[in-house]
Length: 372
Image (cartoon, rainbow, N blue to C red; front, side, top):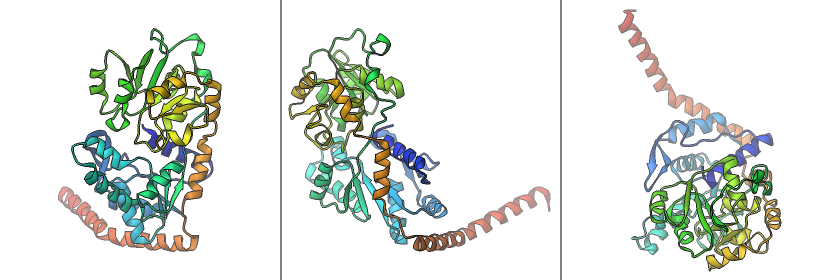
């Protein structure tokens, strides 16, 4: 579970509530997978194009949205281009910066340039690229991305709310020195968590989450920070609510869903003035952005928690889903019907030799077994 998965899951849930029929094709759908190098928790689907084609054709969608630039995304993109089918994509993460963070020994002007060429070629062939914030629109426009539109994020206010703080008189950080500064999310090098852990702050530091960087950070900062591992649901909400400040040191996120989750519980957020924090925090009374992250974190201690929680109410998953649907590029119905009818006929003919082979194989097996 991460911000991208949560965004897509909540969007699908709200779309279905609104009466739309949604088919999701994901690596967990029985595809052969292998772990992403340097990030084994993420699985990459292999040899998926034929199954992606079958599922698209049989579903016959009005609109296609490609969420990520993995093999499934490239397979769907290839098929849409072949059919002349309009589609949209979304840009969730600064992929080139993530790659650079994992391979710092390769000069950025080589690696980042190649990575941007890769993702630009993927996205620019679509009808619309959905990105998280206005600052990301400007950032990607400067990188020569086209057809950009803002698609924001939401928060579940029934799960994250201020009333959870010190619920029933219990403090989830009992025994720890106040103030408590926390970070929640994937523990990975591109999240820049070590900057938070190196900061000279009063009180206590807590890192909540799991990921490929957890073991090394836990070993290095065992005496100065608490590492809880991943938390979910009501327990995660309590970790947000009982904290005093949420510190968001990432410079590679495009939004930072955890920012508004923290705010929804009344916990103010400190971040750098980069995409995500700079779109959510300034002028909100819900946090502070500054190039000096320590100064931002300390300034958050002066903020009023009721104002913080009030700002989070501007982010609704229902509105996120409605915006998503409005940004899709569906085909006109007559053209769509004709395309999928033709595609199903082609798919059936393509599978005919294999069905005949299986039928012959079954009969041969029965003959060998029974002699009939």
